[in-house]
Image (cartoon, rainbow, N blue to C red; front, side, top):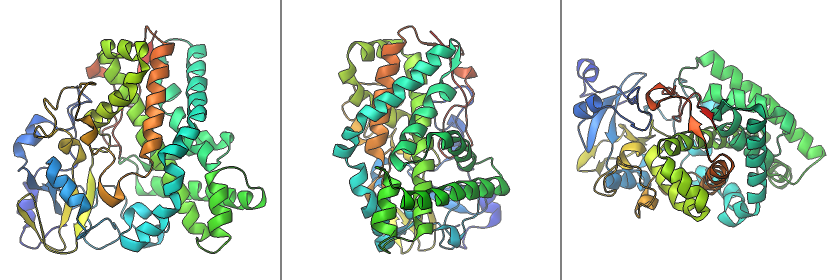
Length: 410
């Protein structure tokens, strides 16, 4: 990606992107060495599958980029800056509205907006609480030490989104395992293709089952109200459901695991949360800012000449909004590398993106994170990590950053 003025020899000398943080601290999104090489606030980086793109890092500039109508989210357009290992295919696009622009994007988003409104998420909070309690019951029954990722962080969002969509409990492990293959940048094309095919097959069968025997779930409603009326094709619904399943599970699971790890490094904040659960909403906003699990950032393609952060971007050039660095912009966040649950400006983070394409499921993610952390603090007052911070295994090649496991005791 990039204009013809950048020679291959010049590309070779650019900082390689996506960045990988230091091995000994999962809370740092980029090493000091990479920071020193990066031109800021807008500079060129080398992409993992060839070519280059502009990297935008400043908070104000990222906001400008993500709301600018002259930049496309359509990864199927020629020249789009590719950050994941699987070359995009046009015939995979049906229902994947996060990669669409304009009316095509609005068409799908409008179908889901009401489902994820705050008032509707509040109605399902008892379900979230029940899911969290059940996971902690299982973990406690297994006994210490336990892997908090496997026993808690992964199953809570998995079970929640499966319930919302109407995916049977028996299929939850199948979905969870295949989702992690899809969201791992180390997975090969054949692995991802097989995982996508398996999920599509399961969801396609499920749509037919919902048509015959509908329930009180999102997949049933969309089948009856959209597919059967001709507003939505079946393959579009399958892709839409797959997007919600994979994205809604992986990001929240990593946030729960990393948030628990942060609080284990700061037991005074864990104690404060146990004493006063009303602190949870503010703490969640600061955790979202501090961790920003979508560390690869949000890629865009310039469809017209534009200026971002004082840098001229030509039509046809790729741009990446690095959310993790924008959420540590010291012009917006004082002492940005410090985790501060009392931070007044934490709500200005862009962990869910910004503009028309910002995450539609963010009310659900916030609720899951809040309920999970409050109940975890309450249930295990002596919770502590079995590993030092430097020894916690990371997943730096995941599309959304996280830790591979988190052994704890209590």
